[in-house]
Length: 609
Image (cartoon, rainbow, N blue to C red; front, side, top):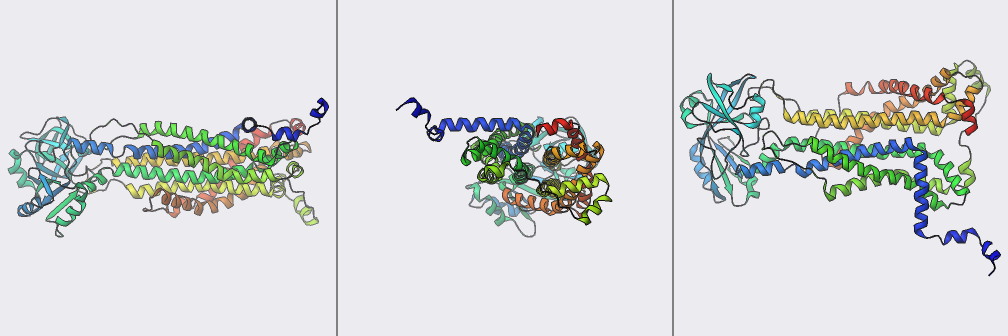
């Protein structure tokens, strides 16, 4: 065959023989150039997905070490399977002699007093008489100091933290001064304030005057069962309805002890899935906002010989690259953040924690990021790829419709408002996308308010009453506050990014039209106000529609996270200002990018088009 014959072979046959590796390299090259050309949008998409993956990674990291401090403390203190408190000592023989019991600790007298005073005030307390901590079952572990002697007390660690006392300090019990000799932890009962009154230990030497000052007297014993898993059933079977026999299984003690960790983890999971759902919707709007650009780019690629499959692959590859990068960044940031936030409960021994996300968590985070992006970008990528080349390159603005009535009304309308109405009328798709974007933004703000209200209901604040130290903080509330703050910052940051993206995309998309307006005499101020006015109608609709949408997002996220209990509707007073605040924020944020974008010379904009 001659050289001319070789050269006359259609290019399509060469393209058909192109290897998969070569096609992949071409897709990666085109996708990379697309990302570099749209850096701002790629960065905003990266930040949005990274925020969701980071929050989800922190939640998984919390779960990986939640039980470790408890397990180590229980092993150190020989924690009981069931802790029993009785009023009548005769009942204790029946409980301790049950067939399920394999070991029992020493029996200790316990008194409830209502006058334990420190610098923070007066509070009720349980005083257990114990001459030494060592025992076969239930031996309190000293964290600091020494065991109590005559005239001394050892205070449970979380209770001591609330009282703000330590070894060497003095408290008064029913008016009598006692020196704090040590701080200890135990797993026989959950720590203060999960279990009240707070617990202290004294010696039998001080029994007579403590008994005289006590309101109630009990006897306690710690039990070990043949099958610890049956502790809940055993405790229920021996607990009496009249309260003379009370038994607490180790499962309940663990649940209450770790309540702060679990509440924080639940809060992070709800926040993470809320962010994930909002990220899905945000990416959908982002892809819709880029539809015109995708159409034009698809047309250019097809004009130079690209197939619809190649076009769809390039558009999808751009977003998947961002998703995979965001998943990696979220896993890294989540691990770092978890190490800063995770710490044992005050009522447990100090444990060096190294939270890890684990293979399952990594898989969930990566799949979530990729799925979010695929669901959001695959349909518009396929639609762009299927468009004909001519239609993809065609102008998408709607031609103006002139009528005597409209001309008469426009003659009496101030120029800035006329510019804004013109933008809405000529680009109805942009107006719809702006409304959807702002609706999601409002939903993020409402989700943040809902999360705040939900966590307030879960954690509450430190209750008042004789069992709670006056003026002391609630460690559960403090941890929930930190988790709520982190989730609210993430949601509000995504909301701010959405508004910024909308404003900047509007300025870029209308650059040629506003340049023509300026060329025929419109001032910079008139065009800026006009662009702002064009966003106020979508902002008003979004301010109203975003409220039920935000409430729905949090409820769905709670179900996905497995947390269905709690109050998910904030007070009406929190929601009423949302629509007006949306109008104000959009008006302010729209003015800044509008003025910045309009400073570009008119000749340069028209020449680039």
